[in-house]
Image 1 (cartoon, rainbow, N blue to C red):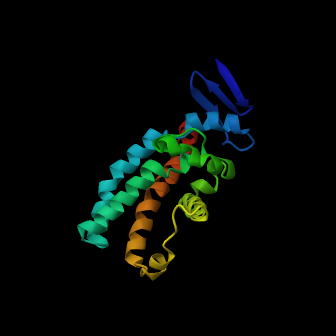
Image 2 (spheres, helix red, strand yellow; image 1 turned 90 degrees about the vertical axis):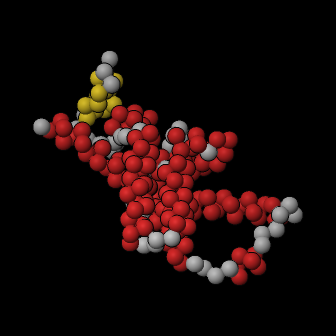
Image 3 (cartoon, rainbow, N blue to C red; image 1 turned 60 degrees about the horizontal axis):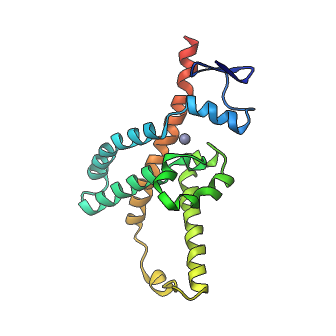
Length: 198
Ligand SMILES: [Zn+2]
């Protein structure tokens, strides 16, 4: 069976024959294309988890030898791998399913960010998801405060000194898996073209 995506793209028996990328395809067809050409969520997670011991070893050797800092880095890395995948810009993805009943909170994110747009940016991808969670948390805190259920402890928050080393460790742990995800997407997208050429 052959499904024509566009004149230059065809799916035949589960194999994609396409000369160009998803430019010009509508969203449904672009997702069909992605499903065939892009690595699955399972593959992404597998690659990220395989690389985790390497990052922890490098972190220990070059940044911090304390087990607390290593555990914080590994925890942030796992949180990002499992729950903050760039593919949260898709309606159906493994990362969103892991949020369980709270998965619905990512619906507005899928509406704002198109698939493999800024959400997959090496620099800003992680920022979009952390910023999104930050705005959501702020709205919930303001709602709870407004209805006098819970008051945000602003005094203790502003009094606490900012630990730059701690922030750097968290940022590195959260950012690395997203970077690996985006780079893996790029490599996979190039691979079939090269294979077809030779
Ligand atoms: Zn992706």
